[in-house]
Image (cartoon, rainbow, N blue to C red; front, side, top):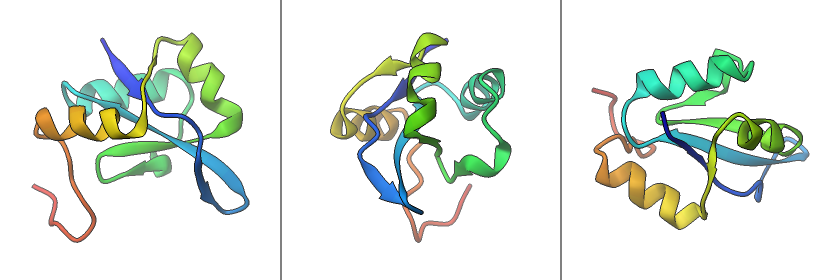
Length: 89
């Protein structure tokens, strides 16, 4: 199982956030997120939003740290990217 996380640089709701993704399947992503106690409501289209204070927890659990551009590239190459405004399949 390999999931990826980008640095917590995305502002929102007075916090900084990371994105957690899989380049294999949503099932893999959901299983990993559940294993680190990430609530289902944190899932948005194709990723989980992870607050900066939980970043190290995800990395310790096995999430691979990569840059934001590489994260999007891997998600897109896997066919799992769901940009805003596109209907979910």
